[in-house]
Image (tube, rainbow, N blue to C red; front, side, top):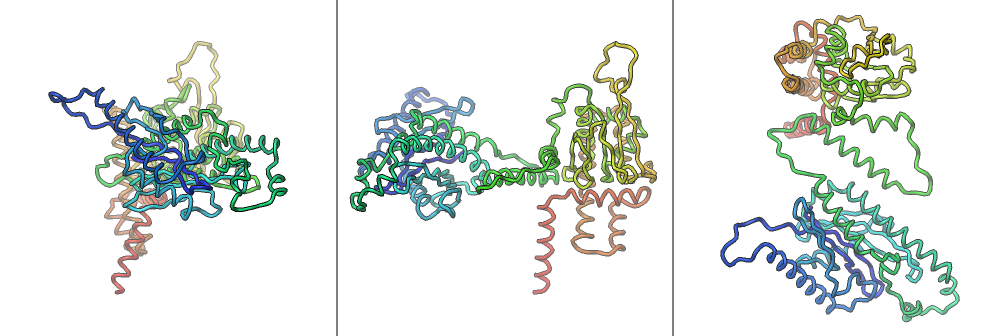
Length: 558
């Protein structure tokens, strides 16, 4: 990450000061060696010496401008600083009191002054964002450290992250906030223990109340130790080495969590939905981390605990499932049979609630992992395994333990399907392979739906043709299914534009359906599928359409 992390302090004698900063130095691009040029090892040593010289010059210039007290100094001028090298990328993380490059000194100095003076959040503790294109953008988190000898028994610090990329820094807000708070809480807890022990030995509040107060000599009334270093406040012998490790990891982790990816063409709806979900999840975690107050945080219910974790379950867990499992849609079709599989797939595509009830959570989760490939990501709401029934508005894939009863209004509804997974009683004791699911389980499928499922939708007919073609491998079938979903998502977008955004009538909508090839045999199923898939459109696409329509209306009115 092309950024710099710095710890700043508001000194009672000298004002805002930079205590410690960590920056990433990228390796130079390799070039063929020339005659008389230095070897790579010598070049690295020269760069190190040059960095030390710049640091010393920055330190000396800062010292000349103002004397540095104990509270303004972290490492002595003779200290070489800390260096960590990433063996994978060759990036070096350098830490010292001031930046290595002189041009960065003024940038960090300005960020330090603003973070501890004018750019603060309400309460003077917490995160804030500021900056501009010329001096860089800053993520700042201010906080207090307990000190028995300080004015108000606390000192003011801040940790700033300076970068030139505004968008990247804003997108990293939840990550930086979460991990900087861990560092800050560690410093505060360590300093609080020192503060309590000093107060027990000599309570400063009573001493100050008994002594005459004079603003001119107030710093000298505290045993001449008005400016205490952070090392003295925390009694941490390896404080700066620990901060170097923390800041170096923060720069490396923050730089690797967001990567650029080349997209050929516009991103798919599934990609947009996944990005929106990730953003919502990070904002929710940031909101929980940022909740403050004396009262205890409300505890979510059991169903709420299950939902956020299972709402985003992905294919990555398929290989981790132990025991029998479904490997693909074709495998599921072979186990259930052609008729039962079509009935199951029909309910999935129509948006009905599909309930699997059995004693093997891994088998049920593997079934959901392959079935969700039939739907856009935005239409998948799954609870892989629950000890109680969840309503259809919360999930369309629901796994239950075998002793969970199904409510009467669900079992009698045509908008649900139940798959009971029963253990097969075997007389022999010969071991059975996990791949032979039919020898281990029996599947009973039941639904109150009386509508025939053999006519449509058209998408299901095409999927079954691909699954029944044994000449196509599983990988080819997956790509075929992906193309079919994109084709029908494009039809969904057109129908959404006509029916929801433009507000066209039934006659125009019917013409659009005919144009999309959704009429004819299985027309009713096609319309139901299109309407259900509308719920899987991304919020970005919907807002873009509404903005475009409103902008066009304003243009026409003018």
